[in-house]
Length: 283
Image 1 (cartoon, rainbow, N blue to C red):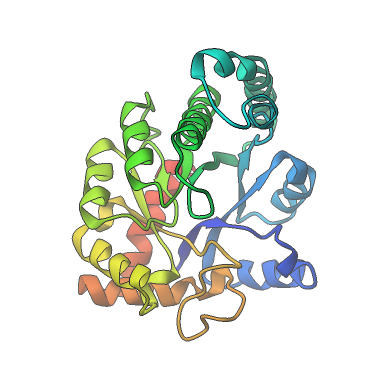
Image 2: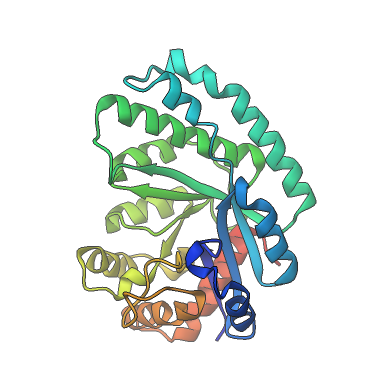
């Protein structure tokens, strides 16, 4: 049984002591593909891993352009006043990313496109600013020609409305992925209708509120629009919940999904691998 880890963070310092040993081991295992997500500051390191490991691909982001808003729009945010401040940095980021993608075919996605209110009060100004930044992140993905990997934390309604209005193309099998999906089951179906894939993590094995919600999501959405990720080193599935996660544990998530869908783990692995390969245009 071969499977595809659609989102990971192998640049994380939790892998610093045994990163290469682990990736060597995973490449010899049932892990057929890994997509690692990081920013431009980790680019050279990521490209070196992509060169060394055939199964390793990259999701890149150009975060940093939005810092100008923190400088000029600390207390309030006016899109007409502050929006144009990011035009030049975004144009520069897009040009840089386009060149990188031409030179490096293992860059397959853009993200995380990020909106999160879990640690921030939802004041009108903060919602307006973060919604604007999120919409611009989606714009960067579209202009570069990469499917967006979308992170939404305590922002179900805000992210849904922005994504609904975004002019994202279909990249072969989907317009992007809803990374580490935590929203309502009905909204997951709405995203699928809009052309997005729903990404399932090891949380589906947990007995927490998020885990129970994700079980309902898995029951309701079709395998044809599902992909699977570890988000490692985080979100480790049971029974290893409090240990470091890695792509080798993806099989536990696959087995949990198979039980919920009343199909074989092999079928889950094959369909979700096919979905991810199509979204990321990996042959």
